[in-house]
Structure formats: C-alpha cells, structure tokens
Length: 257
Image 1 (tube, rainbow, N blue to C red):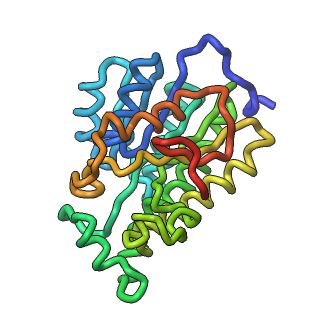
Image 2 (image 1 turned 120 degrees about the vertical axis):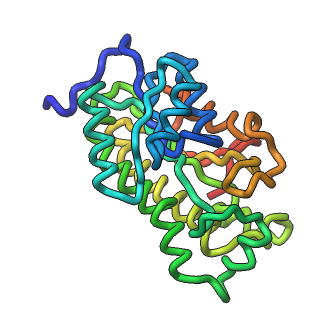
C-alpha cells in the first residue's frame, strides 16, 4: 500500500522534537541537525522556536506545536507531511513539572504534589502534557513514521518514574516521588511500553530515556548534572537507528521500569 511505502535510505532523515526551544530538547535538536537531520523544533510559542532554530542552523525548522491542543498537533504533522513526506524520528520531549507559570524548586514541588494533599487540577494540567500529549502526537505522527525505513520514537522520561527504583528502601529519591510529575513519568513509561509492543510488528522502535537529574527550567535549574551531561543518553538513543525497542535507559545504562 502507498501509505506503507518506505523512504529511500539516502534521503536526509527528518526529525520532530517537541519542546525543543530550550533545555534537553534543544540539545537533542542541535545534535540531530549536526548529524544531518532536518529537525523540526517544536515550540508552543512559534517565536521561541524560531529563535532556537536560527541558532541551530540551516537544518532546523521552527514549528508551532502545543501537544495539549489537537488542532496544533494536526497542523504541525500536516506541515511536516507536506514539506517532507515522512518522519523518521519523533522525540517526545515536551514536559512540565507543575501547573503554574512561576519556576518552582524540588522542595516546593513536593510540598504540593504529595498524594495526601495534591490538587486534581494540578494533576490534570501536568498529565495533559506529559502523558496525554505524548499519546496524541504519537498517534498523529504514525502515518508519517510508517513511511520511514528506520522509524523511531523516543520518549524523554525520568528516573523518578521507575517504580522498581523508587520502591527500594535504599533509593535516595523516594521522598521526591509525588503524584503530579513523578507519577506522570511512570505513566509515560507505561505508554512507551504499550506503543513499543504494538508497533514492534511494524519495525517502529519506541524507547524511553532519562536525562538524569539535569539542571533545566523543569527543576528551576537545581539539577546536579549539566545540560551537556544530561543530554548525552537522550541524544545517543535518538541517533541510534539499529538499536532495540521497548527499553528504558538513563545516564548509567538500563533502568528498571
């Protein structure tokens, strides 16, 4: 069938990175562009994406994309389809740590994110981006991914989403597990595995990756790892065209689900 036709191997690969105007997403977009990809720099505010794309260089294209708005998703995918005809790599990086607008540190986030006092509105807001947004953009992008000879989906997760790790009494991060952000990454891991199992028969690879505790706007720049260090594993997974599927890795290697 025509919609299942695979792209030629010598074509310039095409990638979409959500939330790519800053942080880890921006580092991933930079690396992909340096490695010859045409990279669509997804940004809720187009002007921010345009500034980021200009700094990345000629291989970068700014694209307005709000993963919580279906119309925005549809328009972005349609534009990529019109300009490129396919998509080789989708990096679901867009994520938020809370429902407000002012930056918050880890302590403040946890004080309002515990199971005993969490606001359901806060949960809905964060999960709308971190979980439902990933499902929405992935489903919308599948027709374009199916036209690639090496289609991959990379979901940027967090070690906090690992129930195996968090439930270990020796885990240093136990006190940071809450229903808002951390549990959204647990849900994202489940979504990753569901897509991986479903798409394995089509040879579309789906993996989750944690940048580690990286200093970004997500944690009010209080992370202990630099942006460069934290971006290494997401970049490695994004560039790997012949790797496995259904994996969860971090800076130190494989991570438990």
